[in-house]
Length: 60
Image (cartoon, rainbow, N blue to C red; front, side, top):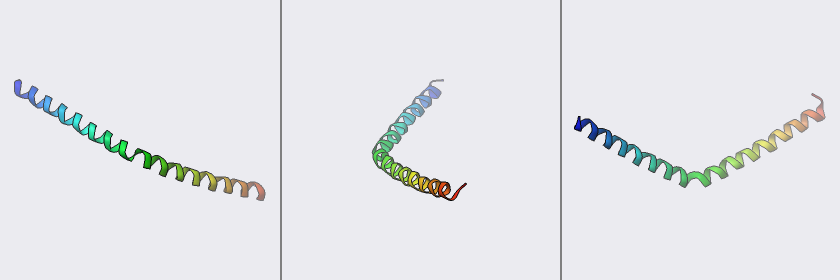
């Protein structure tokens, strides 16, 4: 019984360490990820606007 408890504690500790490193990795990449997704979204918005404008001018 004590051995199973010891294994469970070690597993929980390793899980907490893994989550800590995952969160720190995401925090370090977050500004770059936001900029990249923002630029992609802006490009998609402009292209979508151009397509809609051309369709409206040509008649649906």
